[in-house]
Length: 311
Image (tube, rainbow, N blue to C red; front, side, top):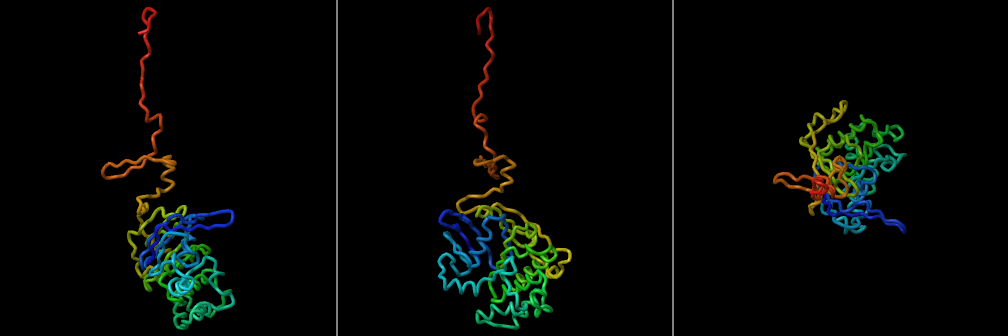
């Protein structure tokens, strides 16, 4: 569904140049439910904006389905955003029109694209648990309910790819679990590929795969050992979503480069250089020996004096 190779994004002004993505590599399969995590400034939101057609890459390769987002024209970009991708913002003000009802908010993008389907709009609100609230104005809905309306809006164009930027960042834990259970259900029933960008590490146990980004590059990846989620778990969010066991990997790119987690390097006091050894089965990374450790040491005996002469 998504393939990025050597993806670069550079923001330039008259006085400064910022490299937000510096050769990022990532592949996402069709139908995946996965999360991209990273600290502020790591490049995760930049990646999401590029995948959503909201920003242009500077170099490298980025494909979503049959679309080449590096070479896409402005006219094609409109078609891509209209038919392929759905977007959920953390800030509800960017998702919703305040003076419309929940149902009218979902219907609006359908009207603009010429694919109006009132029955489908109602069905979307039922899927996110708002069948009894669809005629309420936004001020009558809680923050969590508004975010669920935003999820319904993002699916109104029947996208193949759903992108969510910090969808649980402004809600409490219980509401966050409800939102994530909705993502799980939509992923399972509709087969839509869902990519969640977040800094919340607790999401890692609730999706099939987690990719960590550091300094604009893919650093580590963890994959669920049990990606299947039973349907009985979807509706039960009172005790939290099922936690899955994940196995973490260091990502190796095509050039053979890997990013070792910073905390590992700090624990070994490794700075800019390291030594590597291969014993036939394992590759070992060690802090380099100091220069004095590597030099041969010569030990001389104290001269012994006999009769005024040294021997």
